[in-house]
Amino acid sequence: MFRCAVLLFAALFAVGAAAQVQRNFPPDALRGEIVIDNPPEARLNGNPLRLAPGARIRGQNNMLAMSGSLVGQRLAVHYTLSAHGDLKDVWILTPEEFARRPWPGTPKEAASWQFDRAAQTWTKP
Image (cartoon, rainbow, N blue to C red; front, top):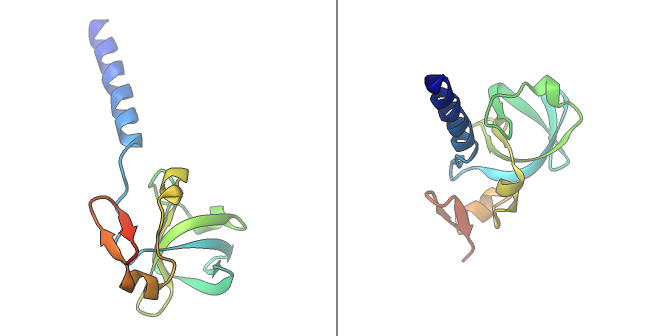
């Protein structure tokens, strides 16, 4: 009985600890708003765009999300683009991640701001 209680406590602690892990975004990740129309078709900040072949969409829990399950939803995201300009990696933001400001929305902003990888924060010049 004692072993079961210890295992249950350990499992609950592990779940709580996993929920508090900070996701690390790459320095080329930009912030935007995405709407999946008819996969692989999407709109990024109102402009039509395609999901790249093999694109990865990660939900707020950092698990992979299928684009078909997100159709029509307006989502605040961080994203990267492929060499062809398609959406390559997409992270749906948690409220805490969305509150982290500033975050660049264009490559020009990202090139002129400073990124602290450890803190996952941007600083404007």
